Image (cartoon, rainbow, N blue to C red; front, top):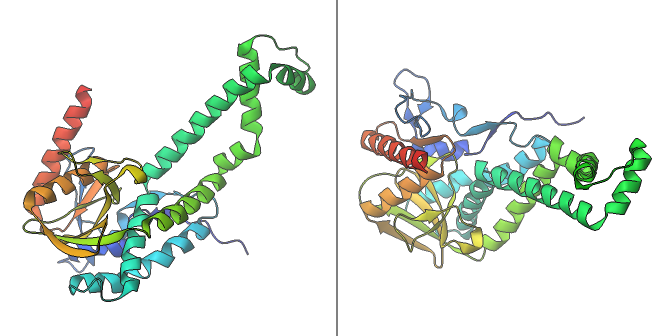
Length: 308
């Protein structure tokens, strides 16, 4: 029997979001505070992890395959989180591996990756259409005559027919039905996982303040400029960072370490989360100062983007 398609797919693991929650006063379960970075003036109610950090039909083809891969990482997270909270993240190498894999999972399973993937496919399709017209005009004419009984002349009609051929191709059909994306994202996860295995892990805590987490939570950063630049290719980054609780952030690094960072760096990392977010950032419900920081930062960011 074919596995059922999973429509609501969490891009931010619920096990991670749970670290930012507190028990609801009305017996409604654990809740966190979302802030809408697209509409920073909007006041959002507290929400459960189930209703946050998800996308509708993110993997549209055989989603169970992808979900099984993701769960192989997520089910190892609780024990690793306990080790972090106990101050012993490096006591068990399996915990280090689980935390590093969690960074990779959230780096790949993201709104940003799907956008990069879609843009890359469309760019290649446009390039291929031009190459067909330029390099194989006679073959295109013969195929057009065979299929349509029309004699095509000029780059415009040939280009339109080349686009039709591309749309009819198996690759494009698999792009449209989501099979290509599922294969691509699973392959990218395994590729980045192998590359990240050569990195060590930093577990960072703030001297003061708290971390928030966005809906694109694992972000590649360079720290040689202020504010930190972000969303560059994996190989060009100084690190990939992932907040895992209000008091802990993971960063891929050169050596395993537990460290403390100043409030200014905490603010810089929170700013990266806000700017890299697709729609929301999430925080502990009692983080009132952090909520104000998030709204003010999002408001300034949107105003600057509007001027460009």
